[in-house]
Image (cartoon, rainbow, N blue to C red):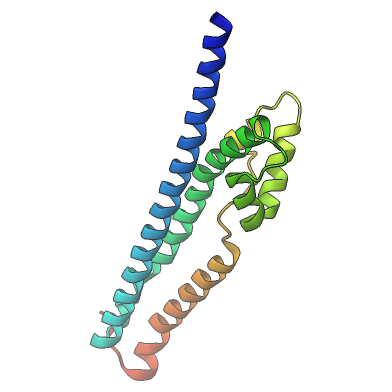
Length: 175
């Protein structure tokens, strides 16, 4: 009877952990999307205001927004990887290898390198996810940022050029 109670507790615990991992990731990704959308909209608003009023100095305020977006992406990676790691680990340990699983399939499709690294961490003896939980050793990324980083850098460069060239070439006020 006591063994049955422990087994039921373990089953409920694993089920709860899976549900929480899925829900937490979904919430984090939704929040990331909203924050990046707000930052993009704010940047567009700043640029539009600068163009409408022909004030180049306003672009200085716009330079902060792409940097903030890059920071948000980096933080998202640090917080999302452990959640997906928990989901993938539980699926691998308790799921049937013949059945598809949500987190493993999602991560494998969207971020194949991340899934490969997570699986290596799961299999590695004695680590129990230490690499994932240590931000200095965690090189897994679930939010692809290279393309977005290039776009952010291009936006930064364009705003710096506008800040420098518009007053000189077109007689815009600086402030």
